Length: 102
Image 1: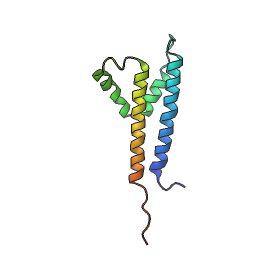
Image 2: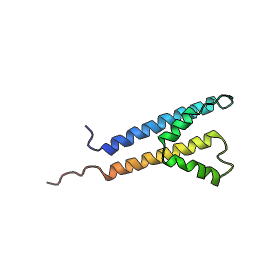
Image 3: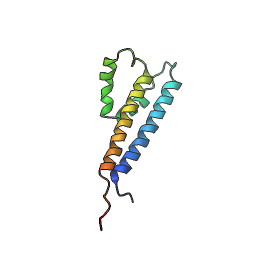
Image 4: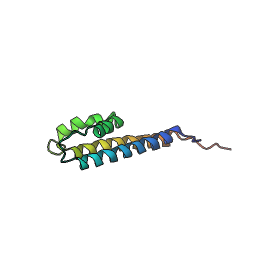
């Protein structure tokens, strides 16, 4: 059994972000010229990367020409999720059990 639950949480969250981001990128690339809607992967990635994914409207407003298409937006939300995963790994390092002194 793992002695540090933050490490397990960090690994599971990182895996979830990578899998959902890969699904989103593949769907957006495969359906780039399609006229049908394919918003489920994008919404799923936004939900997985909450609360930092809420920064997307502010970033898109600050850099108006760069976030007009879907792929830069997906890349930003993926970065937000991986940043949160990094913070979880940092929390796991800060809360790891200390070795006992004899």
